[in-house]
Length: 300
Image 1: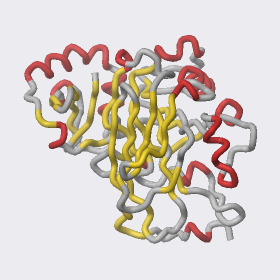
Image 2 (image 1 turned 90 degrees about the horizontal axis):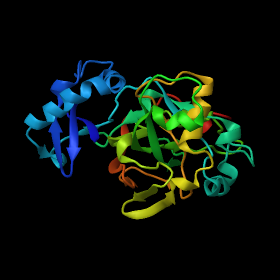
Image 3 (image 1 turned 180 degrees about the horizontal axis):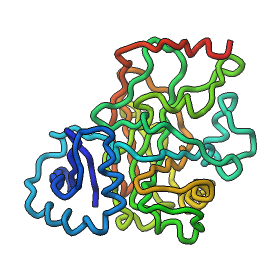
Image 4 (image 1 turned 135 degrees about the vertical axis):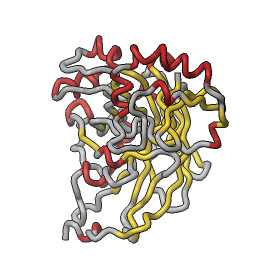
């Protein structure tokens, strides 16, 4: 099952090139903020499923290309991210690295991204106006948590997964000895976490560690790897995060990026494709308003 949020915060099931509006089955679905209806729906999915399937039988399909896709969970409680989780990516970072040499997500732990950084294909990525720093794409598999859990052993961790999605972790790079802001801030600009285009439920993914992960910029293949190359797999990441804090339904866990990261600029089209999960294209533009804080001078 592929679950999308679209247009005015409606909910649909995606089948092929069509989407079926099943909003009537989702309690509280509306554009009223905070848009927590999907978080609640994920928590109650087993009880809602019969209503969802009934709504699907009476829904009229519309072309997927005719709707505006939003993040499939617009307002999760937490967005948790794994740094340094592919060895070739660690090697390629060089002077831009903030993780100490020899450390990975296993030793370094995780960091948080602001939920305000979430965006979908309809809005895309907005780079801060007039900031000349380098902004990079990072292609990642996103794990959507399906139930409240704490201290989950990795052998049981995949039972806590609701589904998977595509995620692009947009990052403002450090400038060594000039601007070396915390990772959380550099990755939490508004629209710096494109998520989507839908959630593919876990029952459709036999093994999250056997998925190809590709990212293209303007049609050029930039990243091409497989989730089997993760240093810390999905189950261990859930074990790690849940050992620190309670995970909640709808929480998003970004599993780290493989090698091939590179800069993006206004006017680019960025496409991510993860086997069995989905593919998503987002445009890159400059934000309408400038920032009052001068990021180039942050560390001077």
